Length: 585
Image (cartoon, rainbow, N blue to C red; front, top):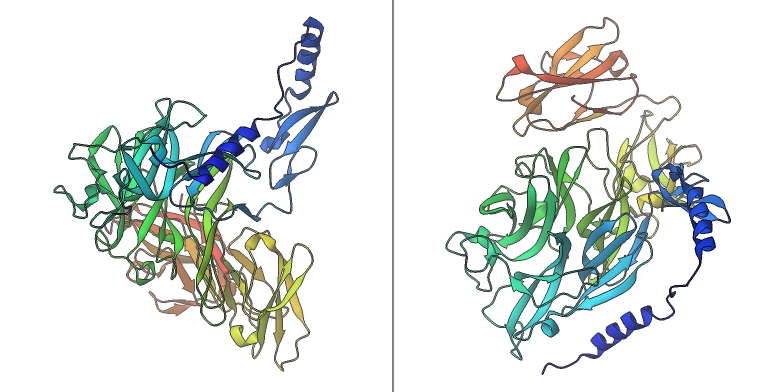
């Protein structure tokens, strides 16, 4: 008989008590039925702007707005629209399963021997549904070091995948000479009474559960190790996982054809930058407006751990052959020590709004990890479908000759943090990437959603009086401030990604003649980059074109050098701005 753990008893007691006091059926007659039917019509046709639920309020329709929206019809953004909110302290590696827009379930890494499952109707308030202990559910094996669950539904059954070590009953766990792997348990309904864990694709040559430390004969990418993620697509159900070879790598297969493995990310497959530290893990897939997204985490948990993503028009196209985009950056204090890291996320959609659910690693003043907790922050999209970052804002301002600058932030509660980043950090620069740390204010952490405005102070004699302030929406990656009498020192250009192998070039349209200079910056310089800083000169023809004489920027793309079939997109330019985003149709 297996020991009954005290925490499990507390968990079961909590579930039992949660049912106490629930409403019981009330008998009623035909008159009450008629009245109920009449009241049900109160909300007919009331959509609450698509951002809330209509409730009967004494015979009148009342919109209960979703988080981030306000007003009688939930048509206005509230002050909490971009807020980062704590969902569950002490929970890491979160996963969220959506049953429908008003019922979600959250799980994640907890104490290492149980997987908690929380229920919520609004993605704000959570209650414990139950905790799954595979060692209790399995009469043969014990499990330890449980982490990174994936909760989903397939063919009418609920599935819970998780990473763990497995040993015979009563044996030491983890054992020596065993590697972590992934198991799956199944439940028939939303009571989530998951049964004994089962290995994945046992006794096959397909990617599979394996406790051995060696790579399988078919290749290391057949070892399903950690961080499973499932995605139901029109092309079938996809299973993503992490395997080990020279670091952490991500592959997937379609459940209908598991013999074909698609390699997406990782140092055994691709050249990876140093800051990812050989780690590509925690895959997450979602789709929006025909675009697929593969998100992942890179770096060591106590070093450069952060979130990244790639975009593509199909799941197999989601590889490092596409542009790898940064979603977050770890926070460091003025001494260079870690303050906060972000990773292992899941994207949740509710009534057309998307949320990033991720864990935050917290560190003490010496840079030591003190804990991980799960947070939520709204996801916003740029015109080309790319994501606004979790914690970066490109703050730009025009130039005054001989002047230095200092940055303040104004919070939504009216508090001013100033200087947030002083002249000692900014100097005479005209661009600053605010990452969420006010290093000149005691390393105070400020999330994007807390900010109502940015202020730039400017001085040429170290007297800090004049400033310019610009409102901020709590979401965007780019903010511009116009200093009186200032001039444009550069223009940061970025554009949408086209085919996987596409190359790009930059054209400019002259304001004085309307003529295009193309290319202004040729393919030999731009190549596959998705951004460029224009500094007043067209390098390819070798001529200067001042910002004030530019009417538009145009980006052209071609595959295999076939510029006769180039695809181009142009955006008007006002001659003053320091940033322009171009979408290629």
